[in-house]
Image (cartoon, rainbow, N blue to C red; front, top):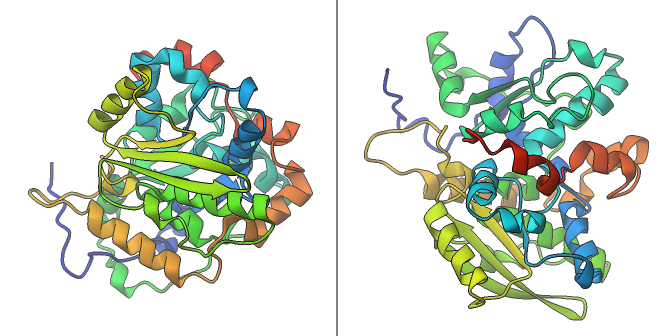
Length: 351
């Protein structure tokens, strides 16, 4: 196997827009860079953000704390070691699976394409996304699996180099519409604490009726394996915890089981540092790039004109034209999954 070396010129490059020119060489279908599609997750707190507010408003109906569900490695870990806590998981699907369902429904409808003729290809920093895409219940659009093929970023780099393409000589191109716009909140989804921060930015706006300072929830950031922070939403104090690395996740779960700690909202990423440190990322022996990549995501967030997911005009339009309101029947069918009823029976060989 050929070693992938990250050169000095390649470090911290934002490859997504440059690679559109490369991906557009595909002769059939539409190819989307799934790393940019995380914005679907949090339109106006839409879906997981509003789910959190729904739970806070009806505390007795739900199990606590609410755990994030976007990391398939973490969801698999919980289903095997702590299945009694599956009902605590957010029902919101991961961004990959949300977009696959939307691509074969809303996107197909807008473009006049038979969804059975769409091949949805996801490019991810995560090896576990391959298994997630193949789960039997991840086909809510009714056209086969919602995501057909998953490539890791490392595999994609090998494809590019096999074609002798130097990304430094590619010009940026705009993403296809609909769903071609992104926000800073979507960008930071790839770093530990980013899911929590993106959700809280929108949850605050929904509760308070105005946006917070964009960096108001930066207390959730950091490379610590486990980080606690309290925030005020309306008249409630929200106790949060962000965890990365499954060893830290196991310690967290044991503390929760023993009653030593109590939280309202917990984000867990299986890989240290979050998705930027994922097992499918380009590697260089002896070097760790998660912290540097995470810093790049925060810089990109700070440079964005749109930093709040609920202000994304294209996702707003998707709700107006297709999904209706947050947690609607259509949104629930396409963007949510009942982990207790479905994942529990599919834990075998889950990556």
